Amino acid sequence: MGRKEENVKYATTIMKTPEFVRNIGTAAHIDHGKTTFSDNLIAGAGMMSEDLAGKQCVLDFDEQEAARGITINAASASMVHHFEGKSYLINLIDTPGHVDFGGDVTRAMRALDGVFILCCAVEGIMPQTETVIRQALKERVKPMLFINKVDRMIVEQQVTKEMMIERFSKLIATFNEKIKANLPAPLNKEWQVSIQDGTVAFGSAYNNWAISAPFMKKSGISFSDIFDYCSKEGGQKELAHKSPLHEVALEMAIRHIQPPTLAQKVRIPIIWKGDLESKVGKELMNCDASGDVVLMVTKIIMDKHAGEVAVGRLFSGTIQKGQTLYVAGQPAPQRVQTVALMVGADRIAIDDAKAGNIVAVTGLKDAIAGSTVSSMIDMEPFEKMAHYSEPVVTEAI
Ligand code: GDP
Image 1: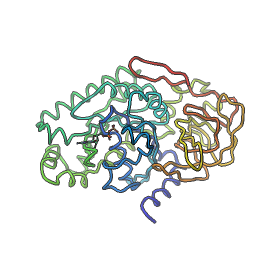
Image 2: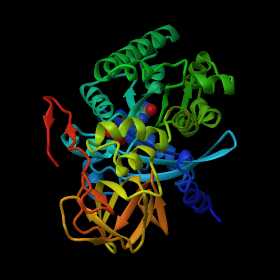
Image 3: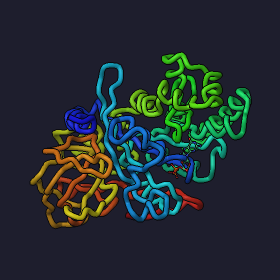
Image 4: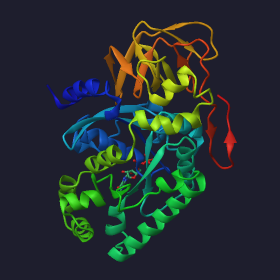
């Protein structure tokens, strides 16, 4: 069995235990390296050739996207990562990277519990970096900071170690100011990022390496070593073997992002305005696989063979083939034809999926991005999503 097939087998097992699931995404100002970063994760998890990471975009499979060179659609990819003797399923949603697609960014955010905000070390925090930070916080999606293109800082800009530390400190301070300004207490303190606790990492997505404080400790690689590796011929390749980006980033997500079972307790009161004391309210809060089905559709993909595929976050219940579901606001019952896990552009058919996962479902004819789909005909839909751009615009779904 190939590595990809083996991972698919693992993935379909782990998804049954939401404590080992992490729903994460990436968001950034355009060209800060979001797509390259996502490719690293997918390649590292054995879902594509490692040599191609940074050079080929698995998530950019849409022709329209490829033509424009920007990620319009938030595709999703599930991957397996083994950490400290346990196996985790990481569902990665690639959020669109252009400010014009603010609506899609927010929709993708709703499916996530954590997000890597990528920031180019050379350009620093740009207007759209601020926008995506605000979007994440508004949805109570926990941000982690990844400072990218550090190779350019060292090789092209020839900054000293001291200059680099100073620039990183400023960048992190600005990032934390945004968190402080956009969250209520105590989360505005709890969600502050820092190098020390490992919620900040830095590296080069193009050269497939990254480093964080916990990884420095583990690997023995120091700040000065990074400079040495970047300055010598073939050094970055060596660094990519010693401190691969995917390991640093996936470990970060596993440690710092809560599983859906815990994250939903923070997120549901913000994103759903129904009665939290009702039966379904409790099921949503508890990410209850035995409860009513509640799926929030984040995206519709057109498939040549299967037709419309609804991709979304299952917040409660277990979704399975043949089930009758309702799209909120539409009286006609819908029949689930297939349930699948997304692996890059591939859909892997599964019998059923439990609350906490990101799934692809066919048969939901009336669903659109933003729809709430449920086994209950009168399900209170998720709150309309606020789309942050400049100026702030609120769009009804
Ligand atoms: P996105 O718009 O945020 O998805 O950015 P991309 O991943 O498409 O990257 C934009 C450009 O920056 C591409 O030409 C990448 O090859 C390049 N790039 C991405 N990460 C790095 C990095 O760490 N170092 C360098 N030097 N270039 C990078």
